[in-house]
Amino acid sequence: MTSEMMTFCTYPEGPPAGADWTDGADLVVNATASPSVRALLDLRRSNSAAVPILTVGVDGRAERVFARLLPAPAGAGVADLEREVKLALADRPDAAHFADAFFPAADGAESSPFYPEPGCSESTFVGSAADLGGLAAIALNWATARLAGPPNDAPVALLAAPPHVTVGSGLLPHVEVSASPRVSLSDPRSGYLVKLTPEAVEDIERAVDDSHSRLGPGVETGGPVYGAWDALRRTVWVDRVGSPPPDSVEAQDRFVCGFEGLADETDRLDASTRGATGFVGTWHTHPLDPPDPSGRDLASLADVFSRPERLPRVFTMLIAGASSEGPVLKAHVFHRAEFVATADS
Ligand SMILES: [Zn+2]
Image 1 (cartoon, rainbow, N blue to C red):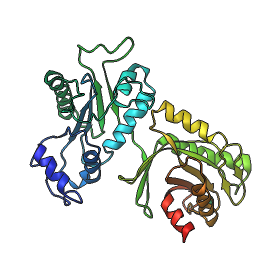
Image 2 (image 1 turned 60 degrees about the horizontal axis):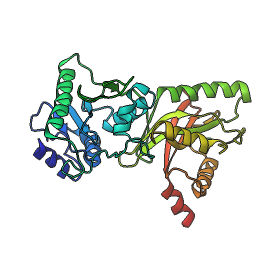
Image 3 (image 1 turned 135 degrees about the vertical axis):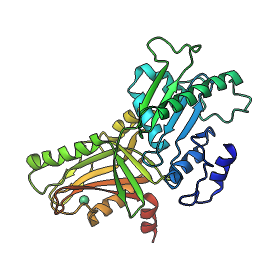
Image 4 (image 1 turned 30 degrees about the vertical axis):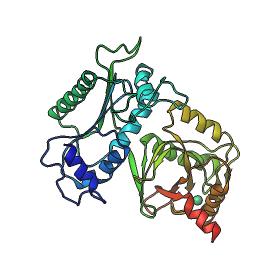
């Protein structure tokens, strides 16, 4: 298995389309704890044979296992699933020990967190062969039972602690988290795929309706967008959208998103999701125009990128605009470098 994974990784562009790098395996297990391998699997998985992929890791004390199963070759990848797990754990006090083990907070909720661990051959690693064998068996048996059960293509994760580990009062010894469906918008210009929660889309649709009665026809509105981005996978995740900050400008020909309260909200989300969600851009409406950035939009973006505040290098602009088929939402992703180059030229 290891040699096949090495073969997979040695393709500079991933395996050629249709190449069966899995050597006829029924299940590929990625136990490398390598972010690069996970990224490569996400990027090239759809080129490969339809073999389920199980990614397995253990916590720094070898007391808990984190298994991520992708049953189908297409659809959400391991990065999508890991974000879903992180966000789900943020709302699960009964699974807080898993969040501490696998997504330690920046201030160190775990006394000596390291995940992925620097290497199981490191002298700091405390797991025994029995610990790792037991945790690996949990992950493998869980994955094969899922695959042998009713067909289900949804990526799913298991976080589990074996019976001899005391997880604490009110805490569950194992939880499963499935990847929820998202609404995907592609931006051909940047090559990014923007994946929105259905709630974010509904919030924008509701705001479009509300703005018509609140501001009158033709007046633009908008607000901040919260989520994360991954430049390697060319993916932006939009977890939620906000209403206009109080210092925003809502006008007939423009929306200027204010900054009041934005930093506090970003800090709050960052802390509550252990860094999974932050400020990634803005959304606004074009009640009378197509959902493409206007010259004014691009000028305000150049202004945003020139500000000294802590702003994302990759900025997502969602525009709900007019079309012959009714309102339509489009995503536009910009990189700070595009504007720095323009400003310098
Ligand atoms: Zn605009």
